[in-house]
Image (cartoon, rainbow, N blue to C red):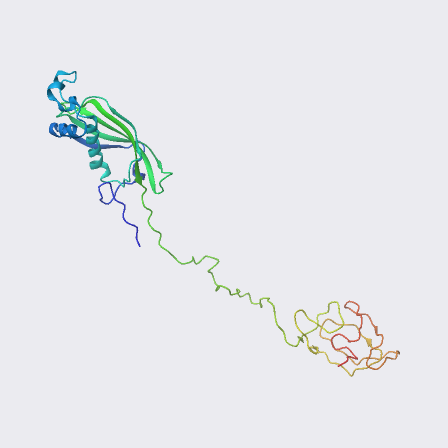
Length: 300
């Protein structure tokens, strides 16, 4: 759903916004001629003081004739301001004025040049999307030569104007160089040529060439695997001897196990006696009732 177009003070599409009303800007609001009948009708309706409505009394006074109500004069200013600026600008409202001065009498037939000067502008703190513009309005009486003779009105006021809309940005997919979208599917591990480590569930352990670490006797448990009967890769076991065994050096590479050699000790049936181990390249082996791996004298 698109946002409604911003409108000017007269309802037409706006072409001027807060950003266009920069300090130092002067806007010519044209020239107005004071209509005598309209001036007196306004005074009779809104400001019926004798010097605005009574011709004879006004001529006998220091005024020398009927003069316009000051609010009629400022109404002429307001109409010129709407016709020449607010009809084009995205005007919202005005929070008020700081100054309004009537500097000289206005009479029927006077020609008045009208303008506004932008004195300051800042985004509004109280009204998001609007900016506050400080303006000074003046009206100058023109002489027969069309040159300004006298300033008759001065006002300083504030106006709210909408900020220029920001065009909506067009949506786009992830950048090809975005690390999050390059070369992988969400949740998939990038391929590196090696199996990614993760928790494994193993059946009976199939041990390849033995890697010798510190030997721990008892039922072999390799990491998280539940080991069944140990099958040690290419190891070939000779017939089990329940006597003393003399083990040759332990090789970390694939083990070729020869027949165990019984020592002089006599062991009880089904129990291995104290073993005398030759030099080992692994850590010293403490032999318990069950030999690690495919040791001799293992009980089924």
